[in-house]
Length: 380
Ligand SMILES: C[S@@+](CC[C@H](N)C(=O)[O-])C[C@H]1O[C@@H](n2cnc3c(N)ncnc32)[C@H](O)[C@@H]1O
Image (cartoon, helix red, strand yellow):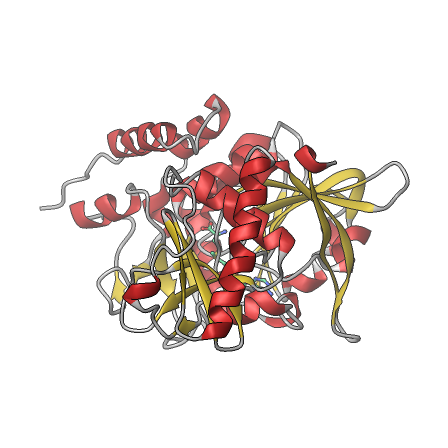
């Protein structure tokens, strides 16, 4: 006997959870999340470590629990035929991104990184306009098309290709929304952007991928503004090639600090893991390109913000700076302590206080425009 489980109360519980986390602020985005069934976009996952195929049209209680919990769901890895990683992004990240996107009816959107297609369906639900989404993996793109048909989500066209090139045929776009971590903005997108359009992208900075809103100024130069904390899987191809220091050291494991060095230089003890800790992280990233996201060997205790210079590392944790063994790390710790003091004296600028210009980066063959010259409102 087949019973049809009701997913709607679970979607409502999910939006309630996202509201308490402050990821969801508008009725518009909440209504979209409650209207577009996320479970219909999951045909397989790695939630238990190995690949599990599921039938989204006959969802089990387990699938509904997975789909309506605030967690990202890995749907592909390099071990399968997709050729790389793909996921259904964590709902709180999706909500934060859609809130930052300031969507409204009629807005023309290009998404880079279709993944499951759920985010594109949410965008189409809000704008009612055609959404184009570009996906690098042919298998993932095919699955996204199937999922969109299952969910009866109209107005979304999934294109297989490298997002670096965008999709000129569908432009000009009011918004280009990127859902994979990139090292910089593709110049091709600028040609496809409406004059008042914006690019919202998780651009590598300090080893994370905070959301950067890029717009043109009156003088036709580009300005970037950090709008939310986020972290996404890295893009493939030229969007990540030629990455500067911090993406290269992201995820690196370094020798663990000696207990005797712990809290040598205190950081403010009241740092909040989701808020002010990330604000401090962005301050360090703006000040010093050695800022990254790293951890220590054999422990998860120090995973987070770190300044890394070859094998020299200082781990920045709420409550203290932890230099890795060696005198050079102590010198770096002194410098980091000064940055922390400056941040405190400057009134602890928030992540959203930071803006930047965009400077040429990438390779000769595949140029990018990457953040440079960071300044915070408090320091202007
Ligand atoms: C985090 S997933 C996207 C999540 C998705 N938007 C959702 O609805 O949950 C990132 C996707 O970007 C794709 N991707 C990575 N690099 C890309 C590139 N250069 N061009 C287009 N897609 C890319 C990956 O294959 C993956 O499917």
